[in-house]
Length: 419
Ligand SMILES: *Cc1c(COP(=O)(O)O)cnc(C)c1O
Image 1: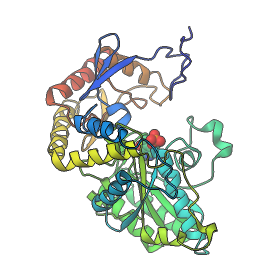
Image 2 (image 1 turned 135 degrees about the horizontal axis):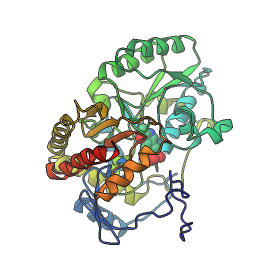
Image 3 (image 1 turned 90 degrees about the vertical axis):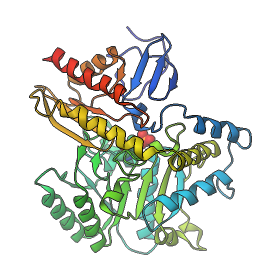
Image 4 (image 1 turned 135 degrees about the vertical axis):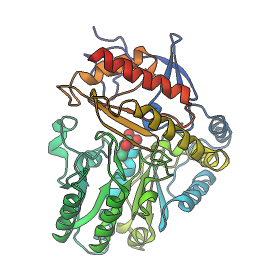
């Protein structure tokens, strides 16, 4: 039976899931459905909500900004929320990132990063235009993002549109050197403009974690060959991996960095691409053809920038790092119950992200196990969207031990049910 709604939802097979849950409200780590159900948001509404839904400081900042300025063209014009936000970001980001380009989503921040990298080389008269990426990577659903991301069922129909990239094997345990060797070999061939990578954990690719020393070595190798290093911290940014940015754990200073998701605390869409001064300088010229030709209508929307500024204030004023340490500890305790459980494999964690694979004969993303798990959690009042047979939990930082107990109890119950 087809739904009566004209809405076409993302990543949704409407023939198998005709009805969407109608949500009327959200508070802290909880969603409130129109039928009165309360649902614990164990995935931070697709990884964006960091301090909880409707944090009062962000809500107030949005209200105040609406009363002053809602939107203004950002070419030739600027506004205080954007200026203040850019300065603040430069202060807290890894060293040497000196310019901030605004866009609206993680995907567009990646497109901007790729265009910056190609412009950088072209304007210096060097013919470097190839991009390096990791196998299993996810960098968004626009054409550039899909091109540098893993190819598969998600983008097969669009394959004719996607550009070719050099792909490195994922640095799985014991195979890290193979990745670094492949990186070096690719760089030595020349023509590589940039390497784009998700630092420390591949998100949509299955919550696959690799150690900081590998990230540091990747950066070192890129530097040796003059290859630009793009850190896609769209998911890992804003405390997810236990530090404000994942690159910090490897003392890596990227040449270009993409931040979005938690940038506004998860309240409004906004993204930034930060870059080194020499990348800006390569475009800086009285020659108009060297202009950085990228924009979207809502670039640096003042209300979204005000929400991001409020988010940064929360990081300064509230014990966010303590909350992150709390969630991290609750995960470690919760996962402990499953480490020696033969129904699970690859029990893993980095900061506030916990993941484990449920043993299943048919385990791919398209397998029935994912939707079965999803329904099992939802029936227990928990929002979890497994990636195939990978269950992951990425809750808002305001989550309590009791709330996470609820999630871990649900995992145990569902595993027993499926067995
Ligand atoms: C989510 C994500 C993106 C895409 O962000 P959108 O806001 O959904 O466009 C890009 N890169 C990574 C690593 C992500 O996790």
